[in-house]
Length: 409
Ligand code: HEC
Ligand code: HEC
Ligand code: HEC
Ligand code: HEC
Ligand code: HEC
Ligand code: HEC
Ligand code: HEC
Ligand code: HEC
Ligand code: HEC
Image 1: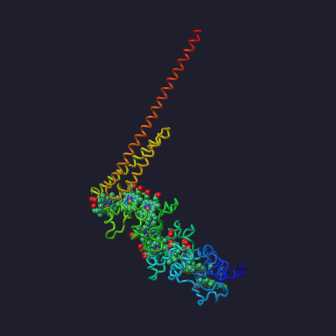
Image 2 (image 1 turned 30 degrees about the horizontal axis):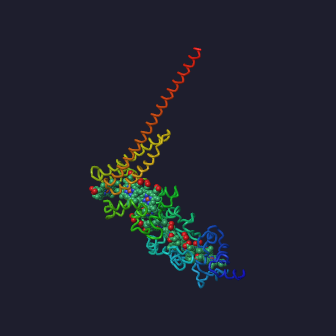
Image 3 (image 1 turned 180 degrees about the vertical axis):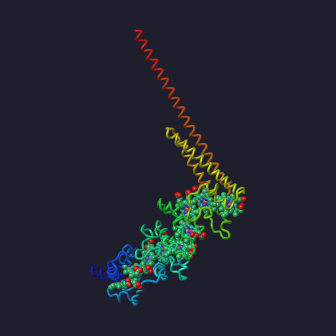
């Protein structure tokens, strides 16, 4: 095919970047601010896929006459009303046939799911203050999820949600808290995600779902912790608390002890002492309060014992003694501490005792190995001192002997 023929065809291919696009040309001229659609659109994922203004708004992009370009007869839809936006985006995103041509594996359930969410239900009921597609994705500079500048990129989701959820004025009519982002920023999850770049840690949408009312494979938001902390969930579900916490007015699950937004590093202070979470329900002197104190004692005891062994072994290592075998065993000891913290979630002290005992045995054995190595080092030092002394005496004796032989001559 000759070049003019290709150009001619391109003009009629929808969204072809090479074609003259009157929408872009004219809108760039009438609104040359950086926030104008024609300027913003350069980074938009739709443009990257060859789509343009008319693919969303309709109209005739080949005409430079505004009357003809933005003509209802040419399918021009204009600016969608706020309540109509989800359906507007869904014309393509809910169509498997359409989307398959661009991204065969892309999901096409965003609108369906959206309608099950609080946002979607409220919008359908006429409340325009909720999030629509463009409040989370922006408009005219919509980016792919994996684009690190996207407002829905895992590192930016919390900030995106907080534009509304941290705004006391916007949220006032609903009488729900506005401290989620503030609390979340104090959590282990935020630390892992934002400070250590661990994308497996949850942001708002991991727990709440992005489009639906709840994330997939979870029967309620309260049960979401178990989708990542699987083993904890398994033990918790078998514990006495499971039935109690999910009973009337409950649905708290892990949240009862760990909170939802402000999940902090756990410690035995949660079990015993003034900050104990157990004491809110279990008075001192009752069996569960006793169990809590016992479990705290075991965990602290094992932790202290392991730390002592570690100190002794590192002293021995620094003074040149060979203790690598004991150091490897100590790793097993620490694993038992992890297992004990996990077993705690059964709320049966007997189940926790096994890893605690095993860990203690290792702590004691490695401590002995460290002590032995340090004693050995001392013995060797004394031995060395004695032999140096003996050699010194011998040299002295030989010198005396030589001198006497010389004077005898
Ligand atoms: C020759 C200039 C010109 C062309 C060509 C043109 N527009 Fe416009 N467009 C305008 C002007 C002027 C307005 C009104 C400006 C305003 O209200 O801010 C407008 C308004 C709009 C609006 C907002 C309408 C509303 O309801 O508020 C949309 C959406 C739009 N144009 C999209 C398009 C699309 C899509 C194309 C191409 C098919 C296109 N325009 C082609 C000049 C043009
Ligand atoms: C992915 C779909 C999509 C594409 C592509 C798109 N728009 Fe829009 N546009 C929208 C939506 C949705 C709104 C409504 C925004 C709102 O309610 O704030 C809108 C609003 C507008 C408006 C109303 C004023 C404003 O800024 O809110 C204009 C004008 C407009 N678009 C022009 C354009 C032009 C020109 C292009 C191409 C350079 C374009 N749009 C590309 C979806 C799109
Ligand atoms: C409350 C915020 C929010 C709303 C409202 C929202 N999205 Fe999303 N969307 C997200 C987040 C967050 C992701 C990223 C999910 C991830 O990390 O995989 C996403 C991902 C996507 C994706 C990528 C594929 C996928 O499903 O993961 C598409 C396409 C998409 N959204 C389209 C839409 C459309 C269309 C609407 C309106 C019907 C919409 N979104 C409404 C937050 C939202
Ligand atoms: C004309 C059809 C069409 C319309 C209308 C449309 N999109 Fe898209 N969208 C696409 C295509 C095609 C892609 C590129 C394929 C892909 O990445 O899924 C895409 C990609 C996306 C992505 C990136 C998904 C990813 O890969 O991470 C998001 C987010 C998105 N669109 C949101 C929206 C929103 C929000 C609206 C409404 C304002 C909208 N789209 C309207 C066709 C459309
Ligand atoms: C444009 C503003 C806006 C944005 C952005 C927004 N929301 Fe909302 N959201 C609302 C409003 C308004 C409600 C309705 C409050 C209600 O009914 O209690 C709501 C309701 C909710 C609810 C239900 C609260 C309840 O009543 O139990 C959850 C959960 C929620 N949003 C999570 C999110 C998450 C997660 C994000 C970000 C991915 C987000 N929202 C982004 C405005 C927004
Ligand atoms: C680790 C999981 C998790 C993360 C991360 C998370 N949430 Fe929640 N959120 C929950 C749970 C669980 C509830 C309680 C819901 C229930 O009981 O059904 C909740 C409740 C809510 C509510 C209802 C009002 C309230 O405070 O009780 C809103 C709104 C909300 N979250 C928004 C957010 C926002 C915004 C973010 C991000 C800044 C976020 N959440 C991060 C798990 C999480
Ligand atoms: C999307 C996966 C995911 C979800 C959902 C999730 N977490 Fe996490 N959680 C993580 C990751 C990743 C870490 C960081 C582990 C680390 O520190 O290396 C973590 C850390 C923790 C820690 C600290 C662990 C430690 O070693 O000190 C606790 C406690 C915790 N999460 C409890 C919860 C609770 C309670 C919920 C539900 C409200 C929850 N998590 C939901 C992934 C998740
Ligand atoms: C009855 C209160 C309670 C409930 C319910 C509970 N936990 Fe815990 N959890 C604790 C205590 C106490 C610790 C701290 C043990 C320590 O470090 O001394 C802990 C520790 C943890 C740790 C850190 C383990 C480590 O190695 O540092 C994770 C992760 C965790 N819990 C997740 C969960 C998950 C997920 C759920 C729900 C399936 C849950 N917890 C339910 C009390 C609870
Ligand atoms: C929200 C209230 C609540 C909190 C917080 C709570 N529990 Fe419970 N726990 C109960 C209830 C109710 C029962 C069942 C009735 C009973 O045995 O007292 C129970 C039962 C138990 C049992 C079983 C007693 C038995 O006889 O089998 C143990 C052990 C226990 N809890 C330990 C703890 C520990 C340890 C904590 C703190 C990490 C804790 N609980 C926090 C309410 C709570």
